[in-house]
Amino acid sequence: MPKKNDKLQETAHVMAELYELRIPGELIGKEVIDASARKIGIVRNVKLTFPPAKISIILKGLDIEIQLPIDSIATIGGVVQLKETIKQAEELEIRDVARLRDEIAKEITAYLS
Image 1 (tube, rainbow, N blue to C red):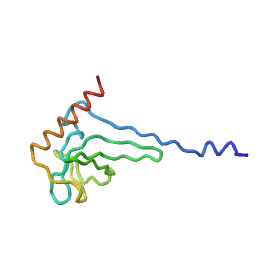
Image 2: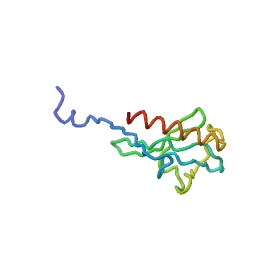
Image 3: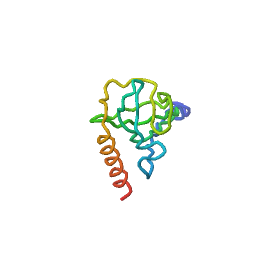
Image 4: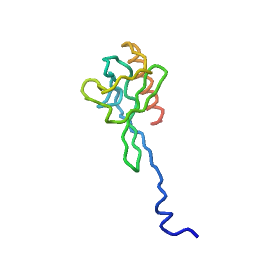
């Protein structure tokens, strides 16, 4: 027969995705540059998962989305600079960044409607 404490030990994981209403915002929509100085995407959203608490960013590139732990970020300023090279992501051109930002803005608008 199971003990009462067994139910308490079962852990439910909670996940939330965070967006900003302005693109580019403080983080969402900012260009992401990898350690090889390649423009590889933009920040799509921030993902929180707990327990245990984990914070990740979702990188949106050309035909790819990559979840990166927050500790893979070197700096956040005008762009998000990563500590590592992301080999599976293609390098973007300026028009690609604008298109990806438009896609995210439409996605956020759809959530709010």
